[in-house]
Length: 337
Image 1 (cartoon, rainbow, N blue to C red):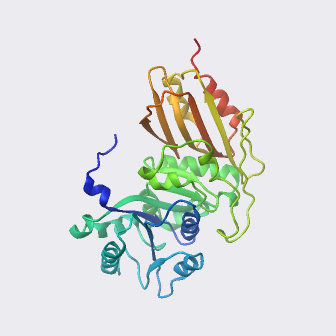
Image 2 (cartoon, rainbow, N blue to C red; image 1 turned 30 degrees about the vertical axis):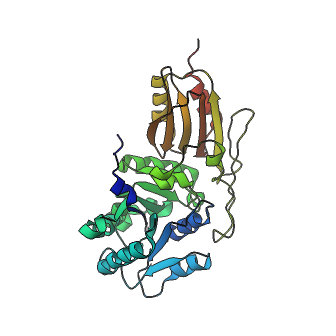
Image 3 (cartoon, helix red, strand yellow; image 1 turned 180 degrees about the vertical axis):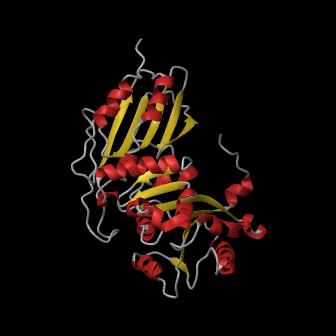
């Protein structure tokens, strides 16, 4: 059930906290976000680095971004006061729509969030989403890193399982299953170079669109964004509604359209059985008595009422998913006259 929002809550600056162990890919994610064509004029980037030299901030500035840096400590411990004061200053000077806060790799998200428990800060800010970037190699070796490492993951609203192109396919599949079993309340999306569509990050700020807009964000990585080349492809077979991969690093994009209503029981059973590698499904779903908009991200479904009584029109994105099999399963849910 969705929370109702007051006018005061709408006026608050939304903080998107980017977390993740050292070297997971947080700065790559920030660079990707800042490369999107969407309007970021109301966005401030705040980077915390553990040390006196701001390396990540320098990288982002070279990419053409305005960045505020907090150095010489971790925002969850030694510089909490500085963070609080910086947030107040940002609010007074810019009154931004959102803040992208990249925490140091040795910070726990809930410790950072606790800074906002200050009464004055609570009036102007709220944590909209905690996003943890997880290097798949670190997950495989998680027992070495201990509870701190697990806390970073468990406290996330969205987990980006990153660098899947550097792991064996079976390891990726097993890792997705293990994380879903260990942290049931989080969205989990497998990524290469933190490639993710804007809607998955912005939560309630998304537009009610579907189809090619979703596909377009799973495309070959531009060399200006990432540090080295990769072999990323996306594919959509418009004639047959089938998807397939060209190589082990490929995302798969395909779609499904149907004028006849779907069985609600059958469709929801289908959602409960899709492989973890199929991490994005979006679009209206026509049932016998109503049409609902589905936004499925990393194993979790969000439904909204959809006024337009149109046909089912779903866009899918996954990693090494057999689009033919998915479509065949969906066809079993179509009700015949």
